[in-house]
Figure 1 (tube, rainbow, N blue to C red):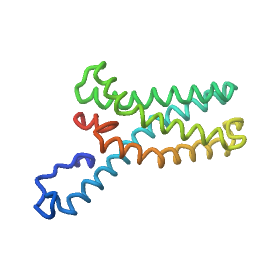
Figure 2 (figure 1 turned 120 degrees about the vertical axis):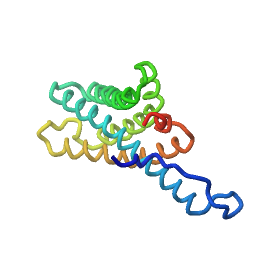
Figure 3 (figure 1 turned 30 degrees about the vertical axis):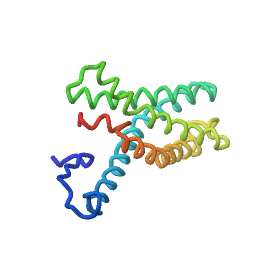
Figure 4 (figure 1 turned 90 degrees about the horizontal axis):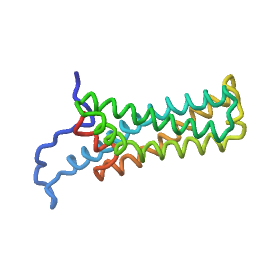
Length: 174
């Protein structure tokens, strides 16, 4: 089994420059932070995609209004995003209450940004919300919305991880 790429163990940096860290060590930390943000966002995207697709399929198949379909998709995206994180920390030995708290701290902002962006995009594409499940427009719009949300959410997660928030709180449980 390979080492988790989000966990880097840096020894003391060689004394080059005023802050004691070499440019190479700073670059490695910078790259690791971006890699961690991408990994965290992919994790978030998984939960959001499951909930988003399920919500859109249920809402469209049931003939629910656009507003109810969007609300269902958002609710399911949060549910599955939190459930995936809670599952990971439960496997690390946390009790359910603690696992839920970690999942909430790790994912709330990430899921909220992702959901805001992807649902805004879906609603903005003419006819996408009214397209049926057999429509290419429906599926292309849904896939594009998730891809755009991913790109927007990565820097948000990087900023949060760099401040010890978001997915950084899960670091001890991997």
